[in-house]
Image (cartoon, rainbow, N blue to C red; front, side, top):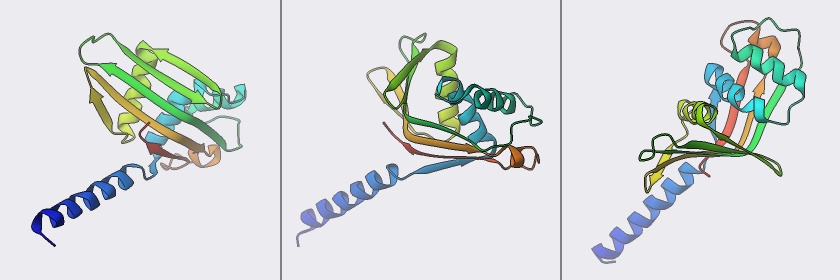
Length: 160
């Protein structure tokens, strides 16, 4: 095999491994997972009691009467911010067949929380993108009440 073919083969294998690694599920736990659930829950189809409980946790109150585990899910979240039109920021949150579009502060909160959770950003033509799919965050009120750092876990796939 010539050195040119060897280099091509090595480069192809390297690119394939990078693509596979970026598609691998990611996780977040503790305060980062609670923050991710906290910014997504208000727009999700959760029952009102569960939204209220997630909001209480995210606002610093671990002493809530709700005791069942809460699962916050989203099929897809795609956020955009412009580094040219600096007032432009938005996120689309998809829950099944329903999509919510957020702008301004709400979009910025989700964008920043995705970054905190390790979602990589990508950019093109003056726009920075962050996205994830298959978000699933589980909050366990009994564990959160212990104030020992546990009770919140998320899994997701980075990218859009």
